[in-house]
Image (cartoon, rainbow over all chains, first blue to last red; front, side):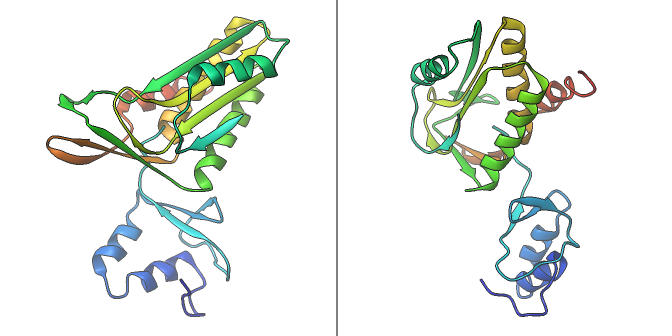
Length: 63
Length: 151
């Protein structure tokens, strides 16, 4: 998935992914959702660059 | 050895593998978690586990590193399955080898408490009434908290 070049943060990515789907946007923005960029947990203001892999993760069930 | 895998495993084989890898051990402790046949009063036909292809292993490796730093161990093994599992199937195996039993037993307890609360797995139980997502129980978090501030 390739977002437009002005999507340079997780904040912007959530808005872009949810641009046509408010329910998806709300789900991505839920405070319990954790965000990982390239397998490192980050906050929503984290910068993004090309080739980054971003994961939005709901609360874990545990092992 | 740490493995996150879809394939079924034999806890006895994993136990023997760790024992072979740690010939200096005076103690090996282990734990096997099984898929429960019932949950909150409802029977469970199938447990579905989702994982993240790289992040899940990374978190488990970090937990294992903390464990090695905390306890005097000669080795440890963690095997965790994902995918669709039936009641009674082994879902997680943890074993530790140490010179003496206390470190081995405590390290298994520690690993399980951290895995139960932190390992990135998402579980869905399928029963006669449909499917539901599972979250860690409050007891899991209080068990995990026992290790805070202890050396």
